[in-house]
Length: 368
Image 1 (cartoon, helix red, strand yellow):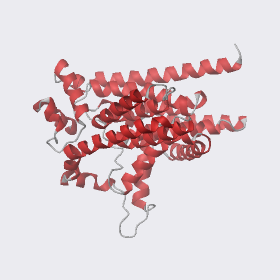
Image 2 (cartoon, rainbow, N blue to C red; image 1 turned 90 degrees about the vertical axis):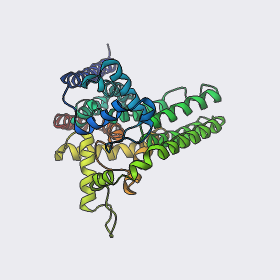
Image 3 (tube, rainbow, N blue to C red; image 1 turned 120 degrees about the vertical axis):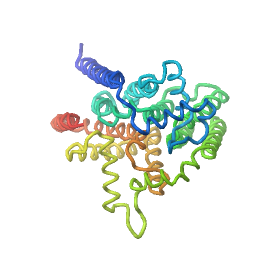
Image 4 (cartoon, one colour; image 1 turned 180 degrees about the vertical axis):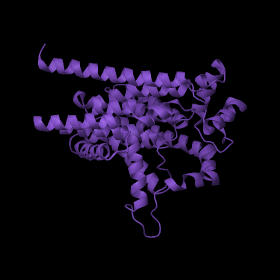
C-alpha cells in the first residue's frame, strides 16, 4: 500500500471515529431525557392543543416555529406519546443526519486532509449538541441548510429533463421554506449558484425552469410571511427580547462599535465552540483564508456558501434578523466549512508550516 492510500485510509478512519462520537453523544443526550425548558414547554402546548392545520397559524404563548417542523414533532409525539423522548425524536434525528451531510460537504469544498477539524467542532462543540436535543427548530434549520447546499453542488445537476429539474427544485425550495424559515437565505445562494453553473456548463436551457422555481420559492415565502412571519415581527415581546442582539448602527455609530464587535465575536465564538482567545483568532484567520481561497479558486461553486453568509449579515445589519447564536445556528456550519477550506489552503504550504498548523488546530479543537 503506497503512502497516498495509507493517508486516505487514515483520514477515513479518523472521520469515522469523529462521526461515531458525534452520533453517540447525541444519543446519550437524547436518552438522558432532561426536562423541557420553558420555551420548549410552550411550543409543546401549541402542538398538543392544536390540530395539524392549526400549526399553520401564528402560535400562542409568544412562540414561533415553522409549521412543517411542528407537524413532524406532533406526528412523532402522537405515535410515541407526549414524552420528552418522543417530542425530541425528530430534532435529534435531524442533528444526526446533519453530521453526515456536513461530512460530505467538507469533502466537496475542502478535502480529506482538513476534514477532521471542522467535523470535530461540529460533532462535539457545546452549541451543536445543546440545541440538537431541543423541541425547537434549530437542528432542522441546520439540516435544511446543509441539504440545500449539498443538492446544489452534487454531480449531474443538469442531467434530468428541464421539466424534472423545475419540478424537483420547486418542491425542494417550497418545502424548505415551510420547514425552516432561514432557508430563504440558503435558497438565494442556491439559485444564484445554479444560474452561474448552468452558464459555465453551457446549459442555459435550464434558465427558464430555474427562474420558474425561483418565482415559486418567493411566492411560498410570501405566503409564509403573510400567514406567520408578519405576526412575529409585530410581537412587542419578541422585539424586546431580541433587541440586544441587533447590530446598532444608529446615532452615527459604525459597524465596528464595541457593542457590534462584541455581538459578532460572541456569535463566531459560538460557531467554533469556544470563546477562548487562541481558538477564536486561529479560526478567524482560517475563515478569512477560506474566503480568499474560495473567491480565488472556486468562486462559482463557493457562492452557494458565501451568498447565504452575506444575506444573513445584511439581514442582521437591517434588523431583519438577530445575532442571537441559537437563532443563527443554521449558518454556523457553513462558516465551519469555510474554516475547513482555509485549513486545506494552509496545508499546501511547506511541510514545517503544515505540521505547525495541524498542531494549532489540535489544540484549538481541544478547547472547542
